[in-house]
Length: 460
Image (cartoon, rainbow, N blue to C red; front, side):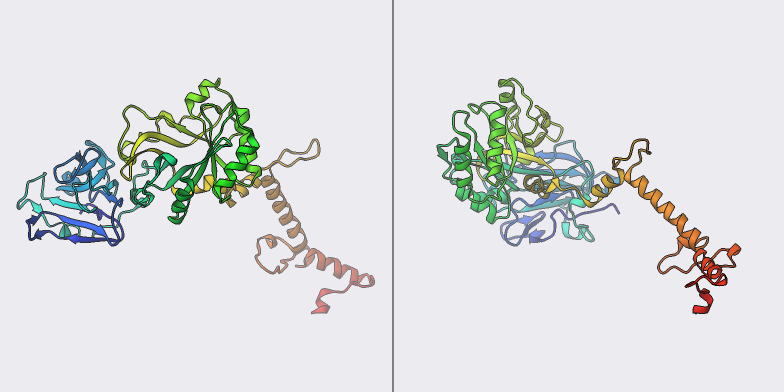
């Protein structure tokens, strides 16, 4: 039998089974999770082809909210599966693997059909069928199903971490809901120039840290304000110097010299500046200067009418918004100003990697090489040597040292001695009567009556 996976991961529970209900017959199984299932990933129960995706009566809309329907060819196990009340992350015509993530449970009642967040899952005997005998009870069908998870994702599906960019304009934003919907990081405004401190920063900061999510505080740099005064204002209002910073460098900010001075001033006060928001249009406006030496970029490019749930409207890792400029790479990509999060239209961002990788980038932990990288660097290093000597790597020199040491050991103790492990038992040389070189010298000295020399045999 072809592989089958549970459509929800660990912690799922069936909240309503297949069969009669007081109001009607239930032609599927509802899955949720104790404590709430909003935002939970939804997985393809079997490999197949997406034949419907998006708005559907009873399941919600507009797109990408609604349902996903997957047809499973005979070689994939046959049948059709339906996933309702979700936000799709695949499109009609996509080929999906068994256990591949295809969406997440829609947390918004306004777009999920007006229900408490859950997954409605159906199994149809062959092709999609209306209510009747060709709809099967999913639970027996899922017998021996495998737990889904990241390790089952196709290698081509690299992890993407989504976040939001907010300020005082988003007063009242429900961050708890944003996190439930899959937001893993927050970039929030702290200050601007030497005259403005964002009143919403403390509440956004505290809520994000309490939830264990990733937080970045940013400062809008003004070229007409004193650098040191701006740094003082930002760091004071930031509150916690362990929070990584981003400089926001755009209209009225000045040139790259101002940016570098701002980064230096903030870091002298004990705060790491991890990102530079200097949009491509502003970079061109100031003459496309060299930006090397600044932290990596957060870029912005919003596409054409790119609006909706972040994971559905994200243009992918090959979008031009990921192309660096000014000598810097893009670390975070702001791909829409109309991402639908917690019932708001917000600036939404992407990071190509896991939350742990993003945290390491922001805190600087990724700057520390691994032990494997250190070993490789040491092995390949070519240390300075006197003129005329062989230009060998440290690894080659160590190998030669090991070879020479083994040769010396064999000369002293006998052939094969270098291959012994632990305490050494000299093998001895046949031409020395089975003695090691040291024992042979001792015997000769004793025979000649040299003071202090003793025959080793007499000492045993």
